[in-house]
Length: 349
Image (cartoon, rainbow, N blue to C red; front, top):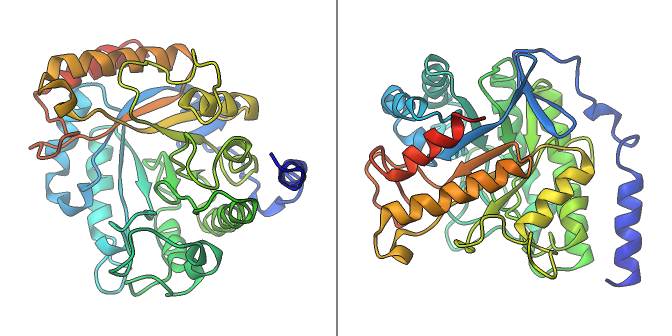
């Protein structure tokens, strides 16, 4: 690492706690999920869970009871989904779809992890862009620049946070799915870090009870590599560390047995330990085509990952992705053997 990069990370680490008094959490309310060191807790008890991504859930709120019912019967405790402004009507403030999802989640005792925006083009974003540019993380998120929506990202974050500030069914808010800035430079890291700090502050002001996750992919994406991954979680505004587990289908805990662990899923987990924050795998999946459509084989490999993750003291592992009628390579439905693997592991937590 260049000397100036090392100095930058050291300075950011020194600023960790005392510089952000406005991000202090209020006195704990046991109804809400909270963190106690590396643990998540709810109702005074440790919370460890298997979850699923159901990213298009807000498109079919009328099916909430059907979907949550199947998931709850298999031990699923958390559902992560896209909660973009595009699901909130022409004003950006029509939260009726989310209201229906929360009501259904309550009936089935499922917690929700809403993702407020996406780095990639499938989001609240203008056509012609494959991902969000540096300019969006630098200043565009405060205005309507780069967004094809009635509200700026800042205004939307504040609106949805205020709407659900008293809703304990929300496990945490995730600011952006897989944020990164290319290329991997100290300057771009600084922009991403400032973005995370400022958005977390905005959200905490209006939704003081719920946890906040940044949403990094991890494993070496631009401006999040090496020590930068840890530094992006090393301030009070971010409550949980998260990363995604893809690609290494035969390695239950990628990086643990590697000679060089940097930029691995296991390195991300160890960063969470060092920060004394809970660690979540917010996406983890395997394409069925890699196994010649052998669903049982895929399920057993995912079972091994679940077991290794919780043995290493991870807090929550969220599979990609549940689809009642699977139409993608990564999807799995109610009859997939993955559901039994989830049920078996969840029963031991």
